Image (tube, rainbow, N blue to C red; front, top):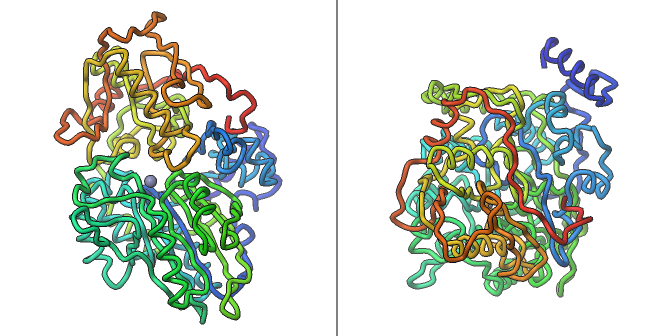
Length: 567
Ligand SMILES: [Zn+2]
């Protein structure tokens, strides 16, 4: 941070009441934040869901993450002050900024951007220096989420992963480039460098494994088994036609067999590199025995400490390492006399200002971006409010998308998927093409305009809601709740499927089951879908306005969740 930026940050800090006693709070080389004494004899470093963010970003954690039934009030369903209290994080600190949405705007101005591959690379190199033989694991969702990743079919990220020294990876959004592209990378670019593991992906015809299910690595004399678990619901949550010849699923019984096999082959510690999502991992850990640690992803939960789950074989530690390059998990294992004696875990926030950019990675990133800089930098409008996505029901980014769909498409009602990725913009920042693509860069970006009956609208909302709030995590198959514009509704998350959605209204009048409504949406999973890409619709909307006022969130009336620490 230069002197001017430092003084500006201090002024912001003073004005916003953030206690910042010393220069060390803002600058420095991060030694005090990242000085983690080594432990044990085998270490694994883990990042997940970076969503192709090569550059440092702002990413606001959710303000709503409701847990229902047994999940209520338990990690990862803790937000804001509830999360701070549960983990003993002091409010208005660097860590409060990293792990929660609280006072996001002020804190972002003080502590700056997070992640960025050049900064992550510096942290990885430091930790590898203090932990010889440490492996780097990527939990997936690395090739999707930015303009350059979409325009290069993930190549910018594939090259960056190799340079970062990723040893083992599994996947989810990677599959939306199609099964051929994934195979081409795994058998080509990654050959001899990155092992892509997935025990739960098979061919649809003969049920043959598509990828290696596991690897057993010797780390300083400790034999560590790593099993890969790709996102089990890929063909449901994303278009099936991208992976038409493959089957997915949790494959619990198969996984148990693999764990036993890896143990029989001499693994003294077993780790699952999982893209299940944290609720699924917690249930899985209670039913499969012999896994020491699950390094989890998909649900983007930044969980400071592992959750210990007891099962038939002992216990399993379950972790989740956040998203967007904001965090790096450090798992230190002490393996002695053929057994794991102790495991220690820390989830380190990647503060870009505290970690100087690694020159080799910085040069890769700028080379990868160079051909696209003009296009990426095109300025479309300025936002006067905070634009963020995450939260169970809506975010200002999605509201902006809904407003664009309603306006440009001339619809009465608009739907936008509850994706968990998409970076945050601070008030006063320019919305560029790069930013719009951060919110929308997918391989099925088509917008649709359909006549739907009131009954169909209810069915859709019920279905998506069940994917989020079914008390059995194995039925939680998607992202956050679909964002809904134009109409209002009431949601009772604790109810059964078919009874969670009520009081649907358009302009104050009840929506009628037999009446037809004009509904706009995007990202259809059906084969053969077409339509104008969503980024064109948003671009048109932004260019007509120049300045975007803070979008007014359209939120359902929630029933039965009073006092839930997920709000
Ligand atoms: Zn995912």
